[in-house]
Length: 100
Image (cartoon, rainbow, N blue to C red; front, side, top):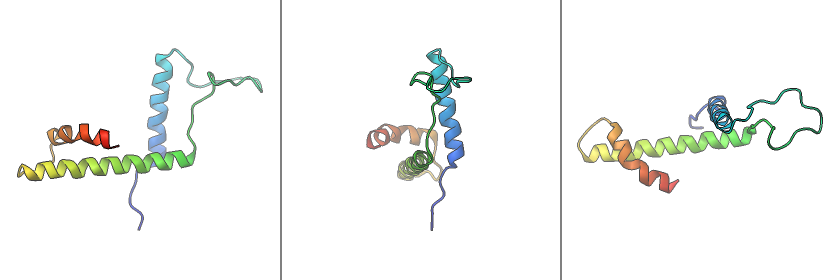
């Protein structure tokens, strides 16, 4: 049985949004139009990701979120609370980021 994961199109859209913002911060064009053959350089090439990279990214994000919820749940349970609150997540994030 295959576990549910994030939609690769959603993750790709998020990546494109981040890439676009970074390009804007560097005052670069996000998409290049009307380039002649052989005129593409690393600087003016559109950023993209192949399908395997997207699948891997989706799986990594799924594992990261699952682990964050499990660790936050343990903290909440230790405090005798049945609901995970943002403070529980805040407490586990530093170590979680170091582990990943």
